[in-house]
Amino acid sequence: MTAPSVQNDLFLRACRREPVERTPVWMMRQAGRYLAEYRAIRAQYDFITMCKTPDVVAEVTVQPVDLVGVDAAILFSDIMVIPEAMGMHLEMVESRGPVLHDPIRSAADVARLRRPDPTDHLGYVLDGIRATNAKLEGRVPLIGFSGSPWTLFVYMVEGSGSKNYRYPKAMIYNEPALARELLDRITEAVGDYMLAQIEAGVHAVQIFDTWGGILPPAEYREFSLPSIQALVERLKPAGVPIIAFSKDCSHSLEAIADTGADVVGIDWRTDLGLARGRVGDRVALQGNLDPVTLFASRDEVKQRVRNVLDAFGEGDGHIFNLGHGILPETPPDNARAVIEAVAEYSARAAS
Image 1 (cartoon, rainbow, N blue to C red):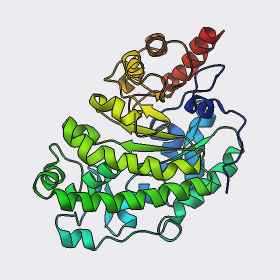
Image 2: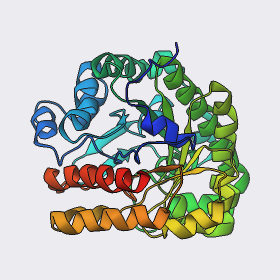
Image 3: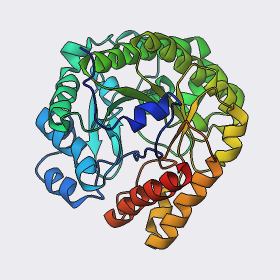
């Protein structure tokens, strides 16, 4: 199916570097624990059940549109649905985050992974997209997403979060051929999944390369970037904007822009103006307010928003966002202050 038309298409126009009346804004992890309304639903379900219940997905996805006023919704889900769909045993541990109890450490482990059929193994995500679009009623676009192949590789080999990521990094150094085989399998699965999301009705997709920055620059360009490039090439014919976000990878901004992605996400460690100078008009840019800024006073939050807008400067192709996900303890009023400030300052500049 084709994604439904939307009343507010600022985000989509900015992705395509078309003129906008003001800068569009959304926030990574905008559907989450900082909202009391989210916590009320979370109290009734465990996290995985929430992700697998389409009506709950729709309710939680739409909350920040109603309560905060963002210009795009991002589907409530988790990047770990892919390892689970490939046959791994996933558990969400409250104190540790995602845990895969059977990490991939050998060729035999890689061989046992299946190529999931999105309809069969991830149909609940596709149902969630359809339920969300019905609830949105065309107000704003819906963004689908996946973890990047490298980021999923890290979790699948390490088994959980880590301070040094010994196992995935050891695999690329000691068994690079096996690492590439695993990355190829993950890339294939992610491509199938993201195309299914587009078919189900998302208006754009984002590739979250959360752990790209744990690699040195050369290894990033050898083991993470090629799989992002392969994904972009596979998704491009579907015709929706593609956002590539590699956290802590400013060393390779030009190479990320050259993947063919429509938008490059910028984390808060990189000056937005310098990033724009480096990539020129090849891509739109998304970002990049430090999430901790939202713990400042409302006046300070608004000034910091203005600083980001000023750093990007005049012209089209900017989507305002945080430099990473909104933190759970963030005051909701300060999230709303970001939205207000982006609208006020960017519209004033446009006029």
